[in-house]
Length: 196
Image (cartoon, rainbow, N blue to C red):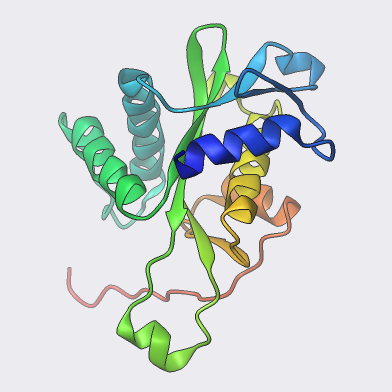
C-alpha cells in the first residue's frame, strides 16, 4: 500500500479530525463551501496546470524586480517538475474540489537532506509545502486553510517534526494567511540588485 493510500485510510477512520471523511475525501463543514472536498490528485492535470498558471501570473504581477517570469509552456513544464518532486520525495498533491472543478490545490514533499544539513543541524524530518493556490473567485472561504490542514495531517502521518514553506516577500496576503496558521520565519533570504 502506498504512503498516500495509508494516509487516506487512516484519516478516514480518525475520530479527532474536525472534517467529515467520505470515500477518501474530506468534506468541508464551512457553509459557504459545503460542497467542497479535499481529495488526492488522480488525473486532474489540466485543472492543476490552470491553478499553477493563475498563481504564477499573480507572482509575476507582484514582482517589482521583474525576476519572476511566465511563458506559454510554464504550466506544463512546472507541473512536470512538481510531479517529479512528489514522486522522488514521498510527496502528495491534494485538490480542493467543488462539483467537478478543482478550485484549489496544495503540494508538498518530504525534505531531502544534503551534506550542509547533516553538518549544521540535527536534521529533523520536515515536510515542505511547495505550492498552494486557490482560484481568485473562491479565496477567503477557508479553502486554503482546509488544504493546509490536510497536508499537515499528511506530514504528521509521515512522522515529520516540522512543516516549512517559502513565501514570496511581496505577497502580503499570503504572509497574513500563514501567520494566522502559526507559521513563523526561520530563515530569511535578503536580496539586493547590484546590476541594472
